[in-house]
Length: 235
Image (cartoon, rainbow, N blue to C red; front, side, top):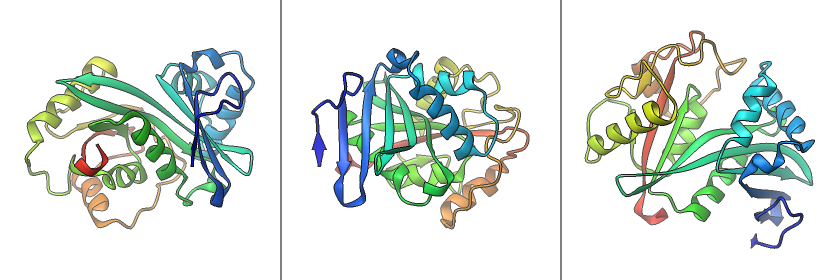
């Protein structure tokens, strides 16, 4: 059930799944949280979820310098977050996922899906874009996609040219990716290292084939730019 009553003045909107004791708070203009102790909690969550010593500066950049932030609570405990930007390009509304992170002992419980559902339902984008080396993020976005790149066989489909253009726009103009391969939706060495302490395991065949085809090397920091046209039923 959606509830727009503010719990405190930082929260602009919230979404509650009472049967699962899950609450997501949406915060617009998260820069106003820059001096809040909650940022320290988000740093701890990011380090736990990724299993790596992510710097506080990196986390602050991903949760404060964005258009909106989701805080995920389970039984009133903060266990994860999602951060997003909204772009417009070629008259299309683009939802860019900066990051979705959940504490390790709350992963595999559908919280990432709930988080993204809330973003899609409130912002009504035409297209989702994300930069990642995580197969779980690819699989999550694929649940919403009518057409998606990179894909398992590398073949162009109906919206290929549009997706190439959008991928390049975000990669070059928003993320300053200097070595981005627009045809492959791929860049070598983006992060310089693996972001997660271990390879997230997925069983989805298409996701596995995409990662195998690109030969993405996590340890060297390779990344892919996911561009997904949403199914019309979700628009």
